Image 1 (tube, helix red, strand yellow):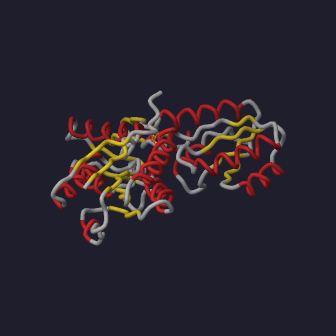
Image 2 (cartoon, helix red, strand yellow):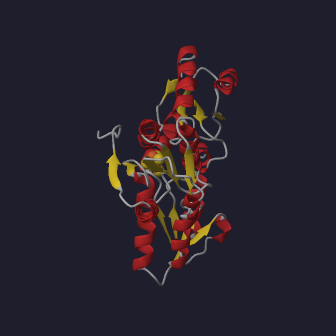
Image 3 (tube, protein in one colour):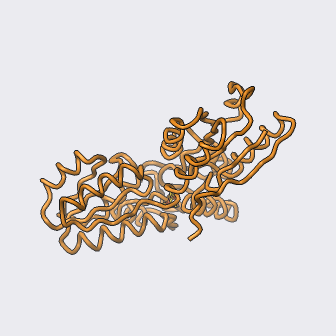
Amino acid sequence: MIIKVAKSAGFCFGVERAVNGVIAWAKANKDKNVKVYGMLIHNSYVIERLKELNIKVIEDINEVGKDDIVFIRSHGVSTDEFSEIEKRASKVYDFTCPYVKKIHEIVREWSVNGNDVIVVGDINHPEVKGTIGHVEKGRKCIVIDSVEKAKDAITQLGSKAIVVCQTTFDNAKWQEIKDYIENNTDYRVFDTICKATINRQQEAKVLAHEVDVMLVIGDRKSSNTNKLYEAIKEIKPTYFIETLKDLEGIDFSKVRTIGITAGASTSQEQIDEVVHALERKFNEVDIYDFEKLLDKS
Ligand code: F3S
């Protein structure tokens, strides 16, 4: 059996930085009340590890107490939420991904200078909610996820507006919306989609063409893992692997090559666990790293 593991599989830079940062801090400060504001990562495996270290995930600002050390996750928060947490907690560590921070800075600077804002993304996603919270009060901000909604938004906004994109939005959809706005307005468009997401999806699609089946490792609650699964299941039979149990129902009898990828919220430990289970299952296994489209810049 040949197993090809996508080089871009697993934690992206921003998630790795936040998860490792919180865990390292909690290990070194066992006597402190450590809380993460919002689900750090959609991965029950990692959340269990946080619980073992007494790190509490909270969703409500009212749960922040004066002795708490609070960590902000990679998705970021609004300016109002940040100040409120700072007021209530003993200390705040901001692990907002630098790429998300860049969007906050763009939105802030341009809206202060009189521009309305279009955010291309999912209105319910925490990153998008945080971004909206950086728009200057009094300026309009509209969230859209289709060309149809872009048409509507343009009729509601003035001639001065900017456009940013949720870092993990679907790249093909973003290109369509971006082209429409650029062809029909003078709005300044900032391409803020994250390269890690694009690379992962492109690499997975190329890999899918080279193998008999694809395994996508991750938590079903993780939106980026689901998007990855959706993107490749059109190409090859694709299986969602949350736990090793999910391998049991797969018929590998005609399979000679397995491709593996994983969402941005899947840890290296989980990927290794699946690879080792496959090694145990098949007599002869060759394992390769697959990095054809990885952006080295
Ligand atoms: Fe940051 Fe991109 Fe990950 S924006 S959190 S490195 S998907």
